[in-house]
Amino acid sequence: VVPQNYFKLPKRTVDSLVSALNFEAALKIVEKTAYTKFFVRADTPEETISNAERAFRQAVLQYAKSKAILELFDIGAVLIYLTFKETEVHYLITLSLGV
Image 1 (tube, rainbow, N blue to C red):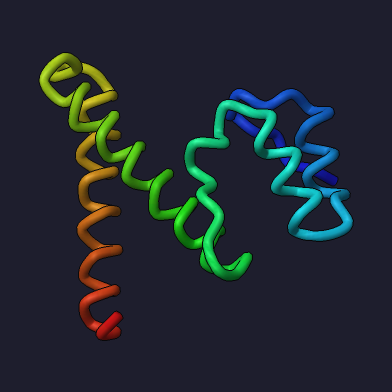
Image 2 (image 1 turned 30 degrees about the horizontal axis):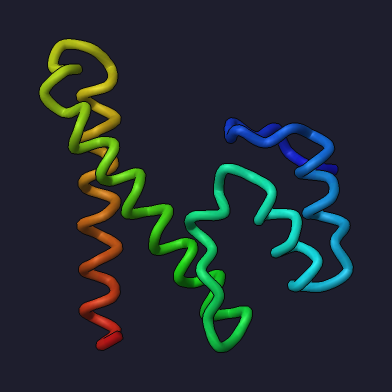
């Protein structure tokens, strides 16, 4: 069962990713999507995924920063604030773990 997603991925692509036999097969599927820019090949699959997650978080943060002033009086301002706080907590956890 694949949960509903809110990304620019058709259900067929999500199903293909979930049922991919290995990392290389999944990466080939990702390379055909708009999200390929987040997946820069690293030495190991774990590093590639970690770098992609970091790049995706950075893109979300940049988007939130770009919309911060425009959405001052609607729910977007609250969501932007929560995104900033989530990023801040992530950085604090990283620092506390010494990573």
